[in-house]
Image 1 (cartoon, rainbow, N blue to C red):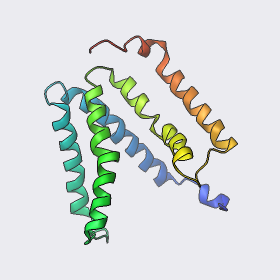
Image 2 (image 1 turned 45 degrees about the vertical axis):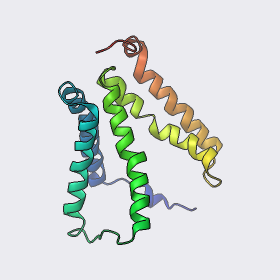
Image 3 (image 1 turned 90 degrees about the vertical axis):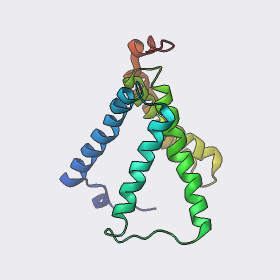
Length: 159
């Protein structure tokens, strides 16, 4: 696959969208940590997924999309929704009852790293190349640096 160098240029709009996404995604850890003190984890995760589904439902037509009409596609969506949203969000919120939000967000940041490793073993066409291996090592080192010894001392303590 050839990628033109011009395809790798990030515009100011792209940077703003990335910053907005970072604030929204990072903020969700803070709000989940606060909310889980009063709302059970499963209820909180369900609310998060329902709100996202409602937003998609409202925006799909104005943005030119359409919902699928066949049952097979909806079954695939259900599996993807469970594996990518419902189960992870529930586990993240449940875990936030016991660990600090900083550690939760850093551990969640390892998801792409584990996805690369899983894809290597689960697919034939997405192998770990030397460049990807270097990226994985750098990513894991970055996570270790971010976690640091201070956050590790919090493990096992019920916060």
